[in-house]
Length: 349
Ligand code: SAH
Ligand code: SF4
Image (cartoon, rainbow, N blue to C red; front, side, top):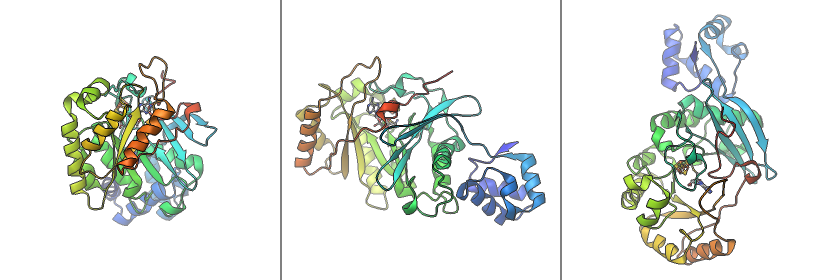
């Protein structure tokens, strides 16, 4: 039996042709899978009885298994899902007033080991497949009953942020495949501009995100190599010079004007002084960026403390005085450990 979810459009077409079908059958099947979100072959009435029987004999349509679903007092919803081999990840839906973002994972655990990140304390077990990445968005749509919806505009689940567990650019091939499936206009039709990929700093891969047309967020978190080396091991390989150069290349290669979101987790007495803020403004000179100041979310055993609200506000005001957008990100879903950096396959076996 072969799993259909995660096959590229081309691969699905090849499968249908191998079954002796015309190519347009692949389009119909694709619509059942990704537009209607159908998991039962018997309901795919326009495919004909004999083809449906054939499909049932050879293929499966699998969703990740939902182990727990929790909804925060602020409306944030988190799922712990399990894949066929027992591996588990978390994904989150973060609602805004009239829309919202699904935050998805790309790896089981993470090998980057950033010192402030809870996910980083769990070693990387494996990469997720394209189907497993897409499957998380499908679970969210199932949960909100959002099949089918025609455009980004009339969906609650309008945006995708690749900011869950794992470093997405360390699983780039599967990520690319997954984003192509999510973006396909006959299926889930999530436009590229509504997809943001966050990286801890794989400078070698960043420019390619411009060719894919998706938005870039960088986990910057420090204004110089001295601080960044201490909190993010990836900086030893890709230092700030390399990272900033890659950001310039991303913007030069982007078709549309593409602001980069610079994520900056505020760690008390580590990176939150106004000297740091000043240094930041020089670091990003010539780039079109907005800062996103993230309150640090402590976890048991973590070596840092959050900056005070007062300090965060001063930091934000300083950046704004230099004409940068620098909002302090509202923490969401903290009561269910769904906030940034807290995801973990908590009930790991
Ligand atoms: N691995 C990718 C994407 C997932 S992390 C990356 O690092 O960019 C999503 C964001 O949460 C990143 O900016 C990350 O640095 C931040 N983060 C990690 N741990 C955190 C914590 N304890 N509190 C607040 N933000 C955290
Ligand atoms: Fe991995 Fe991102 Fe956490 Fe760093 S911040 S350990 S890259 S998930």
